[in-house]
Length: 352
Image (cartoon, rainbow, N blue to C red; front, side, top):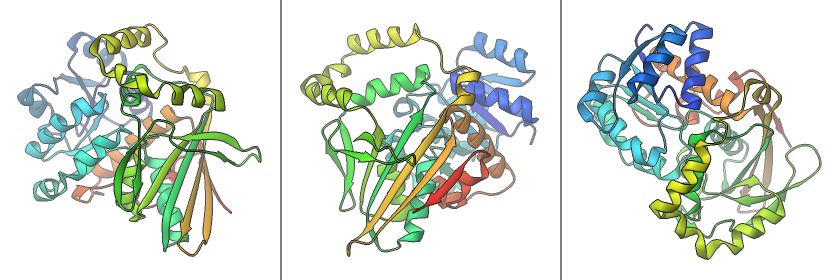
């Protein structure tokens, strides 16, 4: 597979983790990004090939993609970069993957489904913690309750931390409020719209609030269930503060405010260190309910999110290089089945 996998945005926190794991596992990848100096230093450190490219320059990104089977796109916020990368992939016949969790990116790539089929490429966003575990959990719940009309998913990060890229995406998305799927349509709702107490498996229910997670789009593609909400565990007090701040959240869209936030983010650690990642994990919960009231619940426990993202993104890219791909827009479970997440060591699934 020499030279067939391109990791774009490879010197960011998650991209660097993917590059490091690729080197450790003997997976040959080519590193890419717009900062030639950072790219050269990284390539020398790992002994990997590299090619500078800028996703905002169509010709340079096409040149980087031209002889590659698949790209792992790691340069976010993806709402700003996905379309240019996907368009270049359509031109070069390169399969597209990324590590986003942004609902608008999933919607935008889904809209390119027919173009991807004509080009013979797969568009598979969300190949990491966003959204492999929740998508596989949604598909599993659908298999247990085929007549389900309502789906609720939730996750609880036990330890760990966030990278600069994740923090910047969160800051941008907070200004938009929330989204849910209602009767098959994506509907905007206020931030922290709903709350509920969720038992993630330890018998001690955690206060959780709705968030605009990508499964509002992907779980619908995977299951056809028309009503979907996604929660994350957040203590009651921060949830109350977020609700009180709703009238002011649009201020986060101002460039001056974004610049101030980004400076604060850049001054923080780049992401969790190895020891933190090794001791952290994620608990996930899902509930599918039918019109007659029948309800099924399943839970997942997975490794820490950045470890999961790097390992799963590489695994999926290798599957694609070996010929396992379906043209068009796909989700992790439509491409590789509901048990894909169970291929990752340290993952367990339990049904009620």
